[in-house]
Image (tube, rainbow, N blue to C red; front, side):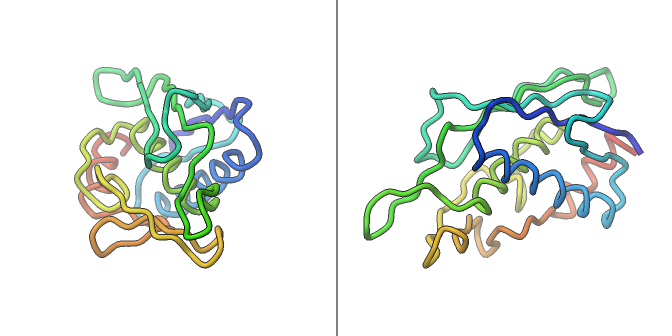
Length: 166
């Protein structure tokens, strides 16, 4: 099992909770699906550094990831940038999106850092649609018929990651 360290910068409590949950849930998916990589908060190995970027609009559902890899596509280091605040419009006005929605965005960027470039499947979709819950904890992101959280990795994503990490 290859360890990859996730180093959280000063990203605030909302993103910190979302990133920690993304690490936990991705590790469960990786183990269940046989992907030989494990994310560890402040662990050893290649580093994914996480910070917020005021240049990324919080009304959009995305972050930015730049990664440096070896010749086989394995991560050497990556920089994940997330919006300072992820927002959703409600009948009562704009509010911060729930931690679950933020977890999906963080997980998406972590999977990019691990070498998944194409936007071709559930978690790795190009376009998500926000689905407002009755409360922030119920907010979801939808790609086609798939809603997250909980996180999902499509078969093609698993195979791509196995090709890099196994």
